[in-house]
View 1 (tube, rainbow, N blue to C red):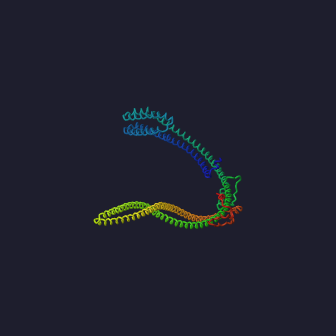
View 2 (view 1 turned 90 degrees about the vertical axis):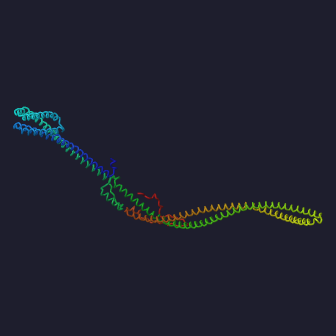
View 3 (view 1 turned 120 degrees about the horizontal axis):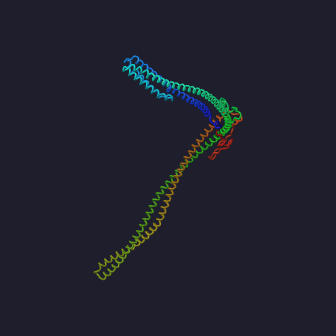
Length: 546
């Protein structure tokens, strides 16, 4: 029965009611079955016995009435009376047939089943004799009708009445037997019902007392005592004295006593924890305030750094733009120098061609001079006839000399120009690599400036994120400060709530808040340090969960 002790209280009570209800149901079912049986017997007695007795009695009455009508018809021997009696006899015969047909449909006893064919045969003979007697009367044969009535109709009628009476007696006997059986069953049901009710009553009392004892044992005492004890505990009185029964280690009162003891201990621990929590919240509040101040200063420094980085980024960007412009100019100068070198080379080639052409002119002037000299000689030979030709030859010679001198001067100038042009070409050839090197360096400077710009952009973005993080830290520190203040208020509220409980003297000393020297947070160099307080550090493992 250990399993029954472990059931809930409502389950035990419901089980008791279910057992009583089951006993009542069994008793009611038995009574219903027996009453239904008696009802069936009474219904059978009425439908299969009383109604047949009534119907057979009416059939008997109809047959006696018909015999009397036949007797009246024979006695009066009048045509009108005979016709009237014949009509009434036919009507009663029809009613008798209907009643007997209804009777045959009921539940028949074996004796009835044997007598019915006999009755039907006798009934047919009586009807046949009656009809024949009426026919003789209608034919005017009065004497023959009287003789037939005395010799056939009357004996057959008497036999039929005897058989009909036997059928009535059989139904009466069966009805009497059924009545006696129902009386016996009723008496048996009454005795059985009384016994079952007494047993159910006794069993209900035993189960009720047993369940009551179990409930009281499970509670540990009277329910009123338990209610009063729990009421005092709910009012915060943990000094209540609970009287337990001997060897009681599992009842509600026993567990209530254990709860009071544990609750008293827990309240002491909670009080110590609340005091430590209040002290810790003050330290956290001071640290949060210092952290908030440092975060604000750091945010200002980050903003200054961000502004400086933006200025540097602007300068580097401008340098990058200048480098790109310088790179373009250097590239253009390099191309111009290359083109100038090519032009100088072409000029040198042209000067050399000019020098060659001037040499040809010089040769022509020299030959012209020789020709003029030859002409002068020939003119001198001619005498007077050659004077004019000699003058012309002299002029031509002068022109040839002047042309030769000019050609020599031009040749010298051309030679000097070729030398200068070659030197200029050499200098340009030397300048082109330097210009290209300068262009390459400018391109490298431009690329470095772009990389510096990208790096400064990343630094600027990082500084922006750092500024946002610093602001978030400042907001979080302010929220932490607010939370610590709220935690301190809740710790004080918890202490006030703990004072709601009335404890014994030993536990009361633990519940009283102890004076603790809380060291305030000190700020130095932007760092917050928390000094050890007058109590042990708060450890979550010291919390008792209930």
